[in-house]
Length: 288
Image 1: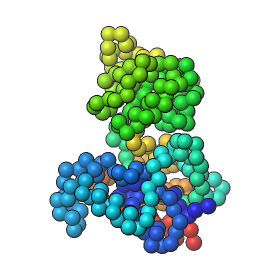
Image 2: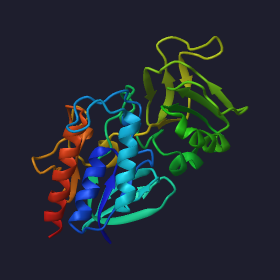
Image 3: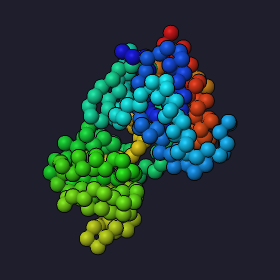
Image 4: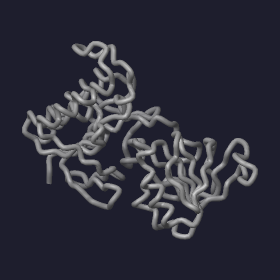
């Protein structure tokens, strides 16, 4: 069992990884090799000490070079769930692989798109965030997929292999996936309805002449770059969508810590990097 697993490859996760390495702790970091879409798209970063008016792309390249020099790998396996055990944690990725660690750092950022009304109520009852985990449950059925990035189109294809009908609601331009059983709807739904399970995806007005405002579906997949920490880990205390932490970045679950944007405002790189450093020292103390 390794010492720590870091969920997220933004600056908070990177800062934590570098400090854990300095403290000679074993760890894995899950995220994207491009590190952070938020940073990558930044035109200029003005308020980071020592890097005046650096572009987001230049900042990402500098971070990637530092990780390479430190021989720290970013594992591009999407984390589907974090589970607290009697001693330690189990992390489940979307391909079904399990990892065990003595502690966990959540540095997964914040969701760029707000939850749909009813979304949280139907988690596990028709709402899913993991295509490879739950796609087979919808063989021959009708599903809706709300996707925020083209990077996850391979997951849409995976779902289309099982479902009879897929309604794709993309939150990005230039959709490149085309299948006979995929219908693209360019309108954000307002609500998820149902009784025991999901029954309808509701739009404020009909999205098209042949598509009703209350679209009958058996399930809704929310494919996002980041998932709410409260959904990622059951029992985690949150407030207004942010993880509740102490000054040492500890959560209400012993051995679980959080850092960066997921702990609240301000959403700034300097704050996230500082919390990443603090959380790594706190984890090191916990592991003693």
